[in-house]
Amino acid sequence: MIISTLSCTEKTAFEDETISKERVRIETGKDVEIIYSDSAHIKARVTAPDLLYFTDKSNPKQEFTHGVKAFFYDLAEQQQSVLVGKYAIRAEQKGITIIRDSVIWESTVEGRLETSELVWDERTNIISTEKPVTIRQKGQIIHGIGFKTDEKLQRWRINVPTGQMKVDDITKSLQ
Image 1 (tube, rainbow, N blue to C red):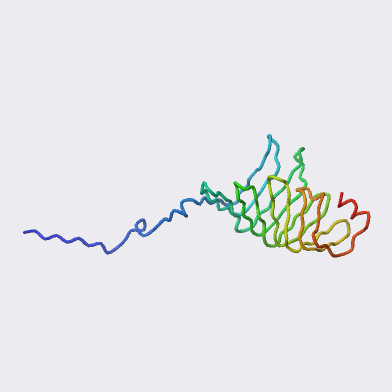
Image 2: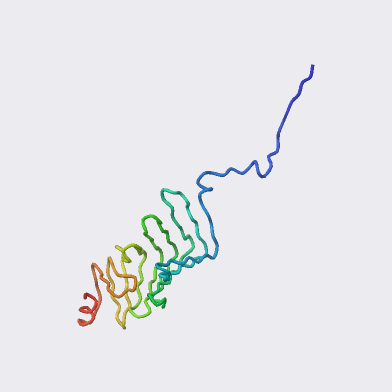
């Protein structure tokens, strides 16, 4: 008669690691640069120190956990504005990007916007927020709550504005 016993007391490093389905569906990148174009024209260039790309087919998204910087261009591919935030998430299928935490958006011509959150709708080219905002433009500082504009920061509206503004500038901004 033969008696055999088997015993395993140590696990190898490979056996010890469990990989979840969620982890398999995430791609990571460091020092990334993403170019968004339309008809061979660059619309935007995004840079970030890191990127988590969730590849789930029903809801693919990009998450920038340590900040993001976006440069927007006109048809002649001249830079028109820069958007910076400490966190961002982009839902690919919806074409919506939410930028949060110390958000600064500066136009080369129209001024500077500061807020805690902005929502960029890529399909309508509208950027908006329901959070408090500060706009610095041509020596003026305008505060308010809620904001909506185009990507060039040319045609903007503050829902509840406060601050001093020249009357002719108000007329120009509302057109």
